[in-house]
Length: 228
Image: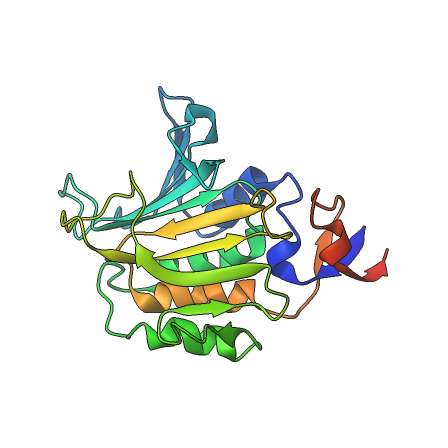
């Protein structure tokens, strides 16, 4: 067992489905297998959903298949989701779990009042650097191996607002410049900024995380704090 930092390069230890599934079950979310070979979790109030969709291979972000999709509805009778967030395999499960804790605790998960500055402040608190050219929308870790940025939405990212020119938070880790991404995440335009901030703060946390395996391409960038 390794205890490593930084968290954003630690990978998912090949247990992303199990760890997030355990988190959701612990929160009391119900799970159903679907005809598409996915696992759908729904919160007790029916407003929040999380689906393990890797087996369905719906689309890719940064050349990686999407593994988890989070969604929120304004009311249980709504056929359309208010917002969605997507995460590929390789994303640190601690960051996704902390986002789910924040989502579960929200009384009105579809509504947000904080500004985009909330996300950047959460990152700056852990030493991430604002982009010189885009200080209000983009931050990068001190090792320049991961970024979170407010960008035009990539294809297939669904939101209740159908306009084409919308901006949403995008996050990714690129251990070596020009090498394949380690993981990617995409938040649709209507995701409340404080929800993204919960993910960002956990992602940038300096607290070491345990891993049994270290991700290819990132091993040389990781610091092993201790071995158990």
